[in-house]
Amino acid sequence: MKSLLFPPIFCLLAVPALADHTGGGAPDHGFADLPFAIACTDAGVRSYAYLARVEADGTAVYMTPTSIALTVAHDGPVEASGDSHILGDCAGHTLAELRDAGQALPGGD
Image 1 (cartoon, rainbow, N blue to C red):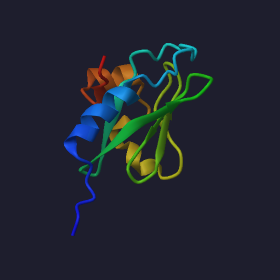
Image 2 (image 1 turned 90 degrees about the horizontal axis):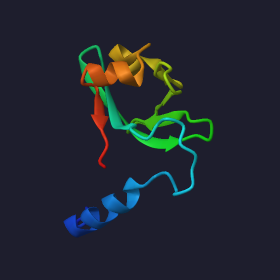
Image 3 (image 1 turned 45 degrees about the vertical axis):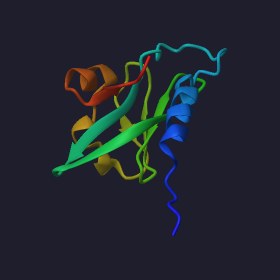
Image 4 (image 1 turned 30 degrees about the horizontal axis):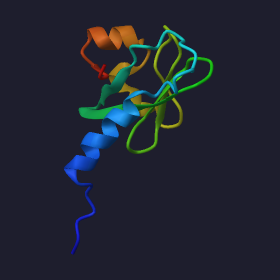
């Protein structure tokens, strides 16, 4: 049976192409240094949410692999839509606080 995994060369070519998510002329809402992912722990289970998009108003939207959206407005706390238990130790914290706690994984330059 043929493997459905992407060949490593595809990943090396695709990731840099996705790195510039601003679209060139998109407004900068102070999120130039958004983390690539945030890590939250609840009841001993660590979950990761990955940067999916930045809304026109500057709100960053992170998605978990189970399709739970975490949102954060500039200098605001992380919030969950739907199943909020995923927030765990991220609840009520800003991205700056998550960075300080080592729960914000930096993006590439």
